[in-house]
Image (cartoon, rainbow, N blue to C red; front, side):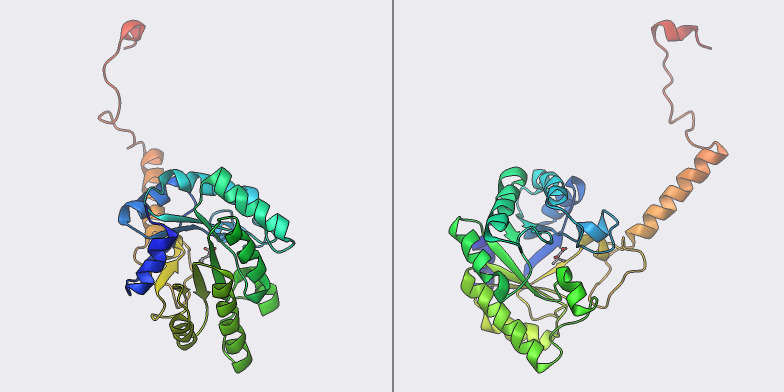
Length: 274
Ligand code: KIV
């Protein structure tokens, strides 16, 4: 069973950390079997699974519901629950209560929250009650309205300095790792070198201590959505469409089920049937 200590150790040993998202039992089981280090129940649940336009409407109850299922399959990976929008921003108490729910009800081992300096105090508080925290800076999807959309961050001097300061504040507050999303690889490299906690990149280039992707993106299950930073390792969406279409045709033409795919022996009163 991988712990936060193992994740920190990996950075010291210069071993890359692997992370992926999961939202249900069967996917989590496969990720765990493949030996992925970290499984994140991301609030990307909103766009990937629940059909929302973005992550903002996702509720704590929805996150817990899915994290419970993932938790049953994550036997080896470090399981992290993503705190959804407004589950931690409003107050320290709300933050503690919701992080506590993740641990108690869903069995996650750590939580992730977005933001820099502004959430540092919350990270300290959670640490204080024994809840490990993963930070998340750069293109933080819960702030899309502030950014004016999904725009790469850290492209000018002020933004670079802000992101660097935020990452340092998160480390100082006691986070055990930090997601760097949607920033130039040069900035991600600088942050990775400056911090002693591991950086986990998504759209942040090759110099982070680890990588995370939304599993459905790498499997080709996100339709036409294919940003530059995603490498598709399969075209599962197309394979499923092909399989389901063939099934539909077979049923419509009467070739499924065949006699070979049917029960033959009759028992008891069924013998009367010819
Ligand atoms: O919600 C999510 O899936 C995430 C990761 C992609 C980092 O925050």
